[in-house]
Length: 140
Image (cartoon, rainbow, N blue to C red):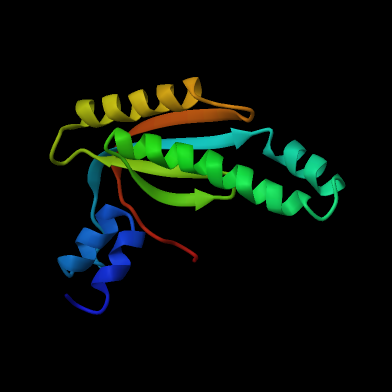
């Protein structure tokens, strides 16, 4: 096992595979379905908890961990991979090069419907897209 291999558990599977294959620096277009899920009501909750005193930020972190954990688990149950966290939102990907675009979209839609149906406390906005993507990390 190489020195970097244990770190790949913290990477999206697509990126870990590209590293293993030595293709990290080569942009590659692939068919995929994507999902964006954004917790709504989070700003208001943050303001309420900030007014609650010193315990507010800790409670906010606990809520965020639980809610994002639910989103992550749902994406993984449906065969997707988390690409990015954007504050209180996630971007997920279902590569379609092995299963076909229709199947990838189906999985992303089922995940989105489950995420929307299971929301507790906070609302959630979900969007699904499909087509050809070129996954890149830009400006980080």
